[in-house]
Length: 369
Image 1 (tube, rainbow, N blue to C red):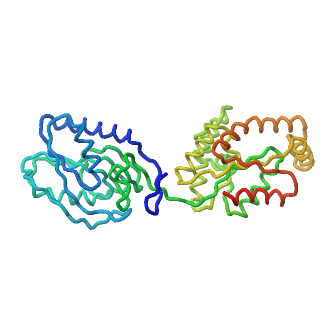
Image 2 (tube, rainbow, N blue to C red; image 1 turned 90 degrees about the vertical axis):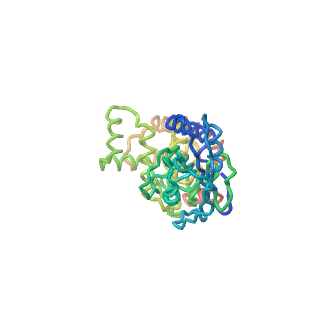
């Protein structure tokens, strides 16, 4: 993560990937132009790195010149284009290839076409390292595109944010920070996890996402994901992690303005934890903590047997089943404890005592995040 002025940016495209894309563009253009000697025109300021690396890779004789236009203020592309530095050489009858660092709305591209309309060139080609299809508003043909990217502001490799960031050898994407508190809540059977989740979601205005509830909702309502999940369940197979992640993503999207989330029942493996990290990162957020309620086995057994007197659940009435469930919990969560400990995000909380006292212990952890 880097900070430029008042904004944060996260790594997006590595220098190696940029170099590979430029090599592919060079190959395509060189093959198309054959033995012609083209004039490459870089659009300043942003294209200076791209143009330099492109020319160094170009395998045949060529010329290069630059034009400069003003089109950006801060992070917004404006419609007000002014030609600051024009062409000084005669391009009549020449093949011209424009080298753009990025094309988003296409406003600069429109001005480029206006400039070259009166230059009597034999052929005008447009090549851009990056293109934002979602933002493009013009009808001009873009002949060569290195990479399509989302419509988010980027810096690095010649691109700037208020004059900073042009020197970076890789591309960074703006981090649209959402001030969320996202928790993974764990606890063995009988630890009171469900009760505490209800208190915490009310106290901190968080959204409680129970994987079991999400599965039941999707299957009951025959959503596309629910139908897909059921097809695996009916065959006695495990539902793929990606299906679960897609369900969780849908829940997060439904509550995009939430203060944060309590994830209950997911993740259960390292792969799932990594997938959840990626999901939250895509939302410009993160998992802040794994909080585990810790209760001695004998107390858990006692609680569940007592609950079984009124719950009607067979697995709450048999001591051997209860002990097996507790053992299975610890076997499965031990790896996750290590995963989040390595990130300094694991918090064990004493789950014995009055409900209010346990809530206070949990709150004291959350308040430090």
